[in-house]
Length: 301
Image (cartoon, rainbow, N blue to C red; front, side, top):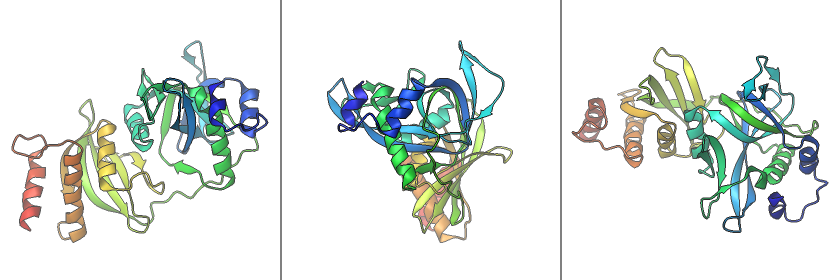
């Protein structure tokens, strides 16, 4: 088992290894949750014979699952009741795939219709089992120290293989809050089928991080990313993630034309769009409203 290479000779009596031995290769299920976790660990790449960093996803007891068998899905959803490693994941929403890729520094990204570990050195796909043990041990260790990185956004995986942790694995629930975040700028964006969304960019001065709130054209909240989890350290990170998730920005609007902070934030968003590959010129790669905002801001009007 290649995972043994990256465990520094640790005993097979570890809690994580006992869990793997007890559950075997896990079970196939569809899973959905509003709270999930990212954990980083090292695995071994056979292609270049080197240790490589990787990121794993975990779901918790309040997640719901429905069993899959012979390619079909059962109709009843049941509470998972324990923590589990998402050993493989297929059928994710492309936007969530993009978010996971961006927030994992692309160590974990889509390939052949599923999330796959990629070697940081040679970019080869590294098998899931190369990371299983190290990820589960890291999760258990961080849970015991209250250091888990919790993501508070809806996650739906149509076809996953879940490997359960031992029943006594616990982790305190963090109080997820948007307190301290204020809206900096508003973007209009569309997805790959042309559906229009409103994207509010938020900032927390005390935490010095950013967050994204995505709403449908009728005002329904679709996705909230980055609140209280430090996913975006800069405006560029947040703007870049929109592109990775498949959104195309067509307009940037100031939250308040009377606020210096809002005007500066709008300039930074426009800079982030340029960094992400947008061309703001008379060719209309970005809509006329953005060009007007650029002209007004640069002239001080």
